[in-house]
Amino acid sequence: MSFTAALTAVLLSIIVNIMVIAPLLWISGRLIVGKEKAKFTDAISVVVLSVILSSIVNFFVGGLLAALIMFIVILALIKHFFDCGWLRAFVISIFSAIIFVIVLVIMAIIGIGVLRLLF
Image 1 (spheres, rainbow, N blue to C red):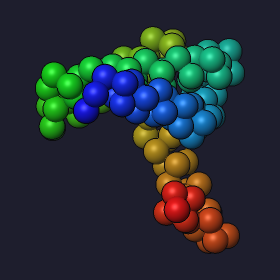
Image 2: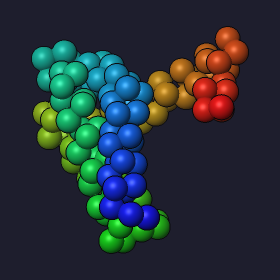
Image 3: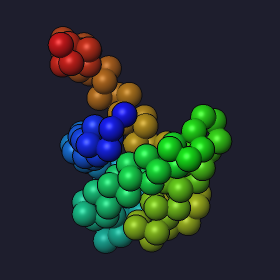
């Protein structure tokens, strides 16, 4: 893959993740640590940094080890930006995933399939 294609993929991933993941992370953060500590800009920062760091880690490591490293990195980013401990960072990440699944189910029920959006 050329550098331009890789950079385009990372930028596209950042944009999509900001639109999809950042709001879910922000809502989860507000529910767990409160609105004083969980700002939307913090959620965007977590998403942008996690996409960039994930690209770098996957380039050098890859596979299951990269996933484990990124899991710890994302928890550390949530911990830092939402000013919470490791356990709350873990709960925020799990809660975000649960909300994401609920949103997908609701979209499927009303007829908006994820695959339908791609084609």
